[in-house]
View 1 (spheres, rainbow, N blue to C red):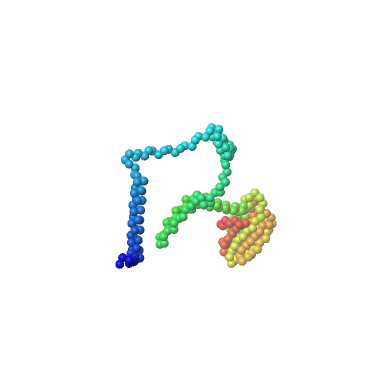
View 2: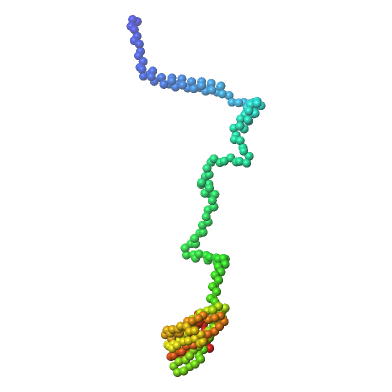
Length: 245
């Protein structure tokens, strides 16, 4: 029996593989504990005796030497544009059209009355009405006066007479017009002076003087009328109505 060798035991591989994860987990836990202890030792909170001081004021820039300061001020003065008395610098920027339009006053809009509502009555104008132009003066009456009368009557006719007087200061010609509707003018003549001309048109006698009538003088015009009344329908000398007797 002693001469026999004991064969070695073969452990299965599955047991070694089963113990390996626990070994790795244990090593990781130990490493984490060590790191926590180191961190707690390094970091220490400030104790009760910690008194922080006031913050330090910002450091001012060192003053420049007098010569450098004066040279800097002189350079700035030379860089600025020289001011000319009595002149103002021109603006180089263009005006904003929107700002100009916004500065203008907006036109007032009169609101329209709602439908069905009568508009308010308009105020009467206070402007005085324009004065009418002056009326033209009536034309001056001709400087001739005429008086009509009947000097003789007979069956079927009569003799009429016009006494014409020139009241002006100049010699004048004249024209007499006497109307008898429905009548007939037989003849007409002037008493004691050169004769003029006459014509009859449907009972209307028109007589034009011969020589001009002297200023301040008179003349008698007589005429024979038939088939008419003794009172004429119209009578005028140079446009001036006769005085009927």
